[in-house]
Image (spheres, rainbow, N blue to C red):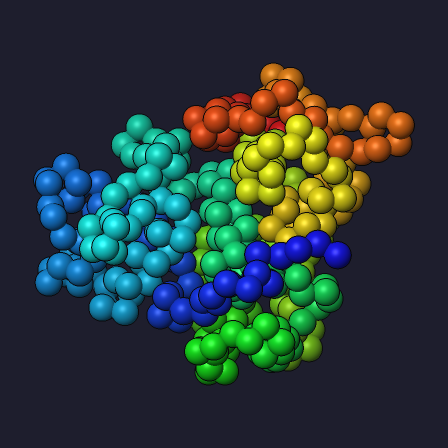
Length: 320
């Protein structure tokens, strides 16, 4: 049985912040540009709290809060020490600056990277729990709400209102599952969030039924996958020179869990990891023991540079 961050004695659950709005197309870029401009102007207060924020972003007050929430949780911006001023992050600069890899979030690697940022983060309780803990491939919203309430009661979580959890779960589903098309809608109308393009959660026949889509992910490149492996390994152990296949496949917050990979697909990807890391990480099956071996822990800059591979491959029409 793996230990999970959300079962730690000092864990504080979070079921809010998005104001019930899923992340929408263009929001991360809007947030990045606003914070970037604020930094360059030397502003000493948050652009999101500014009196002109509603007019600046062209959305209502609650949407401004949601926009900041998603940009922060995706690691595109960071809050100041007092939560007032914001700053862009190295990941935000790498993706969304004028010379960034994907300023308008048009390429699959960006979507997979954002998905990883959200669902490997134990601070986002519903997101982390659904992808890392929920035991069944099929579910409805009420099942998730009930299960989270049970976990909260068992763990002694406080400030856990059912209505708040319901809104959080509803937001999660809308982030990943496109709405059923009506006769008045186009395909684009039904895709409220960019992460619906990943097809990780799909509606199924019965009312309010959904299915987690486990298996090969053809649009997930080896660069973002290896970035996720490195980030997970760093959080799992900063000192160990090996990590087992079992941990990478099944530990809460692992690449196998977050990307909904089958064991076969995960193993296949791990055999290619030495090529992406120039041998820093390598796959080993010595004496029947399946594990990754690392010569040293990748630095922050080395880890961030891993995603470049997928953007080069996308330009050449090759995902892996």
